[in-house]
Length: 243
Image 1 (cartoon, rainbow, N blue to C red):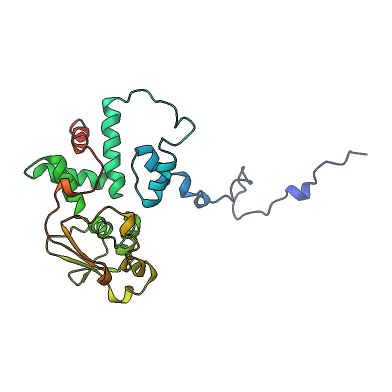
Image 2: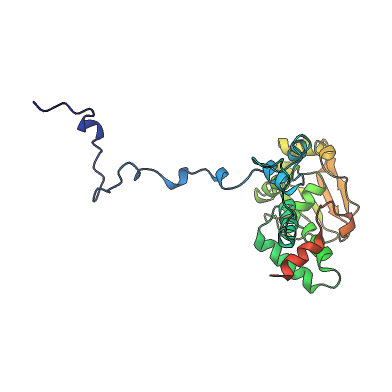
């Protein structure tokens, strides 16, 4: 009598799919979109520790507790960075603080280079006029990500016109305000009550804000010395100049 197999063939029998049976039946049913996108990018707090700057109010608390780089060797002393590494880190700092893509930063840099004056200062001044950046400066939004969400979800008006592009350039004199139908929602009620004021940098002088009315006006073009951004802009210029 033949020995009884340890595993019955009925257990391993799979339903026949339409078409030829693949040679990898156990993996053919795995969907590609089940891979989490969180594994591809670092969280804001982890990125803040890597760059040495607080990108969000939550990240600021983490940096106070753990003022060193993330990972197993975060506490250990690192070797001296190369000139390229120093310039790259400053460029990444600037990118992260405005939450923009590399292509967007490069476009802004090319525009800054064509203007009169110092290219690095021009670059930060250009980025500061973005709609999402001004929403954060005026404390209507708590973070750049929240500001971008407000704009994309069509809650924000500029001079009465609906704007759904976070990269929209606000001109001096233009009024930013929240759509009337959106004012009663919880995020805007928190902002109107001043819930973000103590968590964000002091209001810069190039903005006039009435939080109770959820509106802000860019009174003039911002100057680099007034913009609360941590970055050695000359190193960013050197990074792009060497490429």
